[in-house]
Amino acid sequence: MKDIYVIGMDIGGSHVACQVVNLNGCQALTETYVEVKVAETEAAAVIFAAWEEALKVCLTKTSYVVEGIGVAIPSPFDFSQGIAMADHKFASLKGMNIRAELHRMTGIAADRILFTNDAAAFGMGAWRLNGATD
Image 1 (cartoon, rainbow, N blue to C red):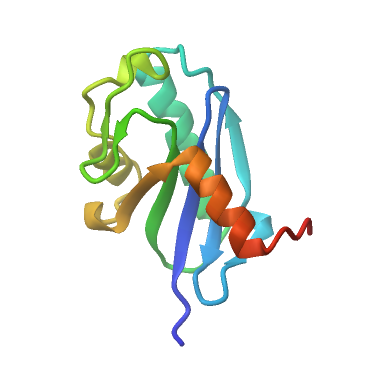
Image 2 (image 1 turned 90 degrees about the vertical axis):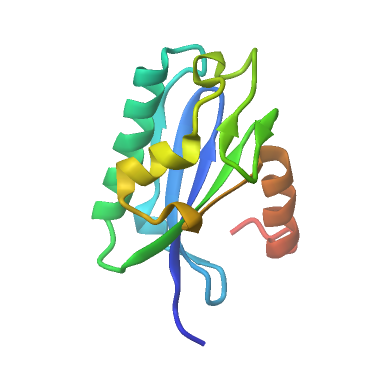
């Protein structure tokens, strides 16, 4: 099976975290992990600047071609269209096309940027790792 490298991106209320993952075997490249603090109450420009910093630093830590981004983000969110919908969390992003912003930041094709609920992503990761802690 061909190695395919993507970024796993966790968008939380106080930070953004990114890491490159080889989808062939679900192997995380630990040396690519980046976390940047940013409060969800900030203005859109501040939030986007933090996300862009995390993504760009993450990308500089690998020589592999990164083909996509998987984003874990809180609801409410239009996961298929990539549109922020929350009034409370990340309120400054409401109505914005997050997929388009991530494409702008990285150059990764918009159709290769996928979203899921952050709690669901945690559950999928725990299931995938079978409860492993290391």
